[in-house]
Image 1 (cartoon, rainbow, N blue to C red):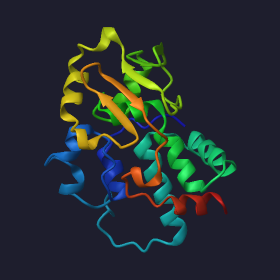
Image 2: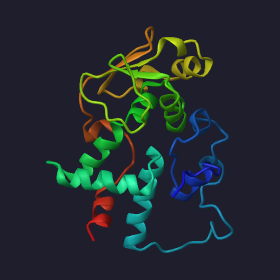
Image 3: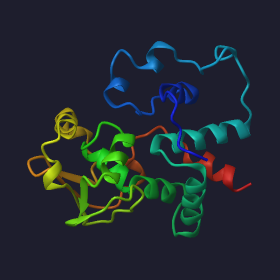
Length: 208
C-alpha cells in the first residue's frame, strides 16, 4: 500500500472531524469541515446507519490518518502496545505521539505532520546532536530535538514556529524558540493528548 497522495481535505470530511492535515488551512474559513461537513461522494449527504464494526473501523482510520501511518505499520504498533504493560489503547497513542515526525510537528517546526515528516527525511532535524532522518524514530524522555544549524533560516520553519502559540505546545514537551530546540520532558499521558480519540474502539477492532 502506497502513501495517499489525493486531496487530504476529503479525509477530514470522511472522518467527520478536523484531522489538521493541512496546517493553517484547517483553522481558516477555507476548512472543508466548516464548509461541507459531510462525507465526500454523491451519497455523502445520505443518512447511513453505522454498525459497531463500522464505528471501530472509522476510529482506526481516523487515528491512522491523523498520524500519517500506513495499515501495516499501525497494526505493528498495536501489537507492541498490546504486549507492553499498561492499558493497550493508551500505549498505542503513546507510541504514535513519540514518533519523531509527530514531535517535530508538536514543537511547531512544521505546520502539519506531513511537512514534519518531510523535514525529518531531508535531514533538517537532529536528536541529541545526531542527524536522524527516520520519521518513525521513537523519542524518549530527555531527548533533545533541534533544527539543524544549516536549516534555521528556512522561511517555512520560521513562519511555522511563529504561528505556533506557547499554549499549543503539549505539557510533556519544552520548547526553546531562540535555539529552535525542544526537550522531551516526559512520556505523554492520555490526558495530555488532546484529540477526540476513542482508542478503546481500536482495541476492540483488533481483538476480534
